Length: 372
Image 1: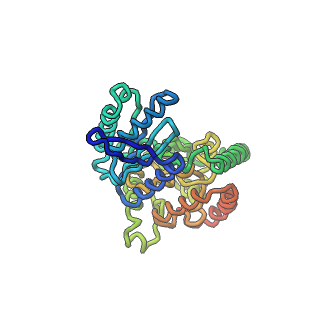
Image 2 (image 1 turned 90 degrees about the vertical axis):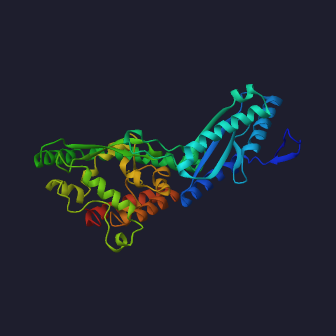
Image 3 (image 1 turned 90 degrees about the horizontal axis):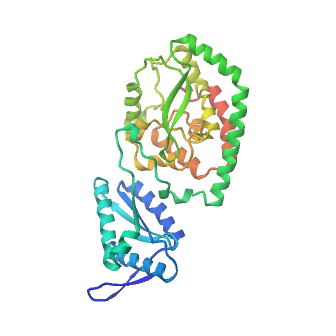
């Protein structure tokens, strides 16, 4: 708790600065509340000058005094890094006003620091304003990775998360390397069949969105004709994602993949139905872009239709070749149901759950349950 005084009447006001643990818990809580409400939030991080002793304490008091004059009752101040970075959570922002509000906030805080301290301190403090959700863009090449600072509950510093990620990564490397070696003859056979089926390359490469919104190149065996129109998939996926709340979509058996798609070659239909077209993704697993188990990575244009809570399926887990929704619903589910399954997996992740999903995957593939 830091006591501050206004210059006008020297009345004592009290600003409660949460400790680091509590403050980061509030970041998670407010992020999730923002996802439910459809509003936006900002996270202001103020780095103190690199000083020590009494001067460091004085600098912290100046910043706290400054925040007391620009915060509302709904804003939440706290230590993001003890004695180094003070944070401020600003909630209930209109998404349309998010960028301009953040710009005003940075200016207001810097001016307030100068008023309660001096111009030198105002210039020495670093101010960073983060937006959530980040304003979307229709330009796929400008896809902005999600800032992990909004996901402190997923920090590598937490032993439980660090341990499971280490074990999971170890299993990914060992199994993907082993399978790539053992499946080389099958790779060669599929490559020949793909080449014979239609002109074009054996492998199909595509930009997908991975963990924390980072794009990567995903590999598949080509299942379509080389001149296939991608617009068909764009319009279908846009409808599928936005129709989850639509009664019409819930009344029919919705598929996450197109059915009766005339862009697919005859051998491509077999590869898709048996999921053999996915085998090259073991390379993505080996190099760390993907995991054996996790949510399926979307295309960049799919994110244009996402609600903020949908993004949790990418931010809370590394994308995978197979996952809970593949073995439970396997394309026969609404998009919202698929996201809920992905979130259920991410929030209860364990090595044993990965093993159970891996063991259940061959049966789902062999039976063709929900496959297209």
